[in-house]
Image (cartoon, rainbow, N blue to C red; front, side, top):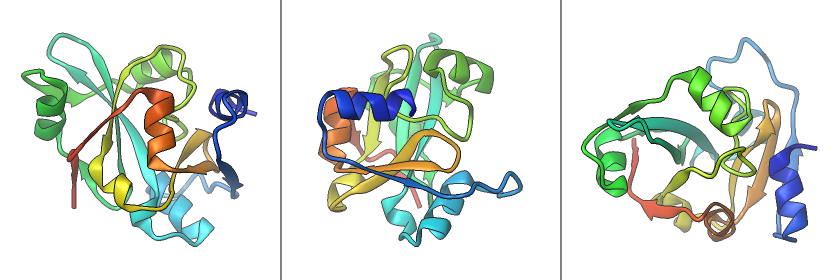
Length: 156
């Protein structure tokens, strides 16, 4: 198992693990997950890392069908500006490989922001820490385990 799944089991959070055969040629890991699991893309969320002007890494969880609004994330985090984080820095801080970064069970606790649209879904799917592995849980359960803030940070 992965640290994300281990964490959910340890705290006895309601969740379901879904797996599929990952295609390394897939242009979008998140859209691939939605397609292979037969889910609406609005219910599948990707985990992105951004860095503030001071170098603080921030976790953003947004629907796979859209993109991250960097200005909205900066505003939610109370910083001047954010840019996408360096992939190597993201991997070091989370302990996960790009394409399989989960908001759960990361090596370092980073400030986390979940797009507000997640609250409109009965459950959402996020990476379980490996390409081809998703975990389904409520947005509230995810926020509770990551101490996340809900904010309108997604576009599209």
